[in-house]
Image 1 (cartoon, rainbow, N blue to C red):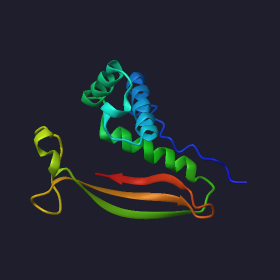
Image 2: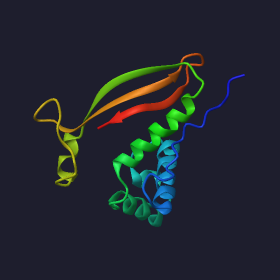
Image 3: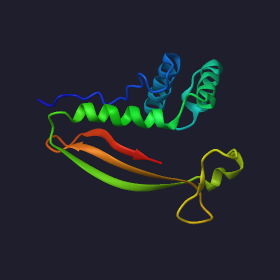
Length: 141
C-alpha cells in the first residue's frame, strides 16, 4: 500500500506573522486548485482578491520565506526514504509583461540581454521506490 504524502508547504515561522502565514497558505491552495496563475481568476470575491494583493505587497512576505518552507517540508518527507534528486535551471521570460513590472522588482536580464525575467535553479526530490515527488531540496532564484 502506498502512503499518501502531504507535500503542502508549512509556512509556520516563515514570515514572522501568523496572519501572513495563513494568507500565504490560502493563496497557494487557491493557485493549486484553480490551476491558474491569475489572482483575478482564482479569487471568488473582491475582498479576497484585495487581501491576496495586500499579501504580495507586504514587506514581510518574502521570497526567502516561501523557499525555506518548501525545502523544510521536503526535508521532513525524505526521512527514511531512498530518494532521487533532479537538478534543473529554468529561465522565466517575462518580456511580454515588461510594461506591468515595477522598477526594483528584482527582475532583470537573464541569459540573453533582451530577455526580462529571472532564472530558477532547483532540485526536485523523488521517492526512488514509489516514484512520487516529495518536493524541492534546493531553490535559488
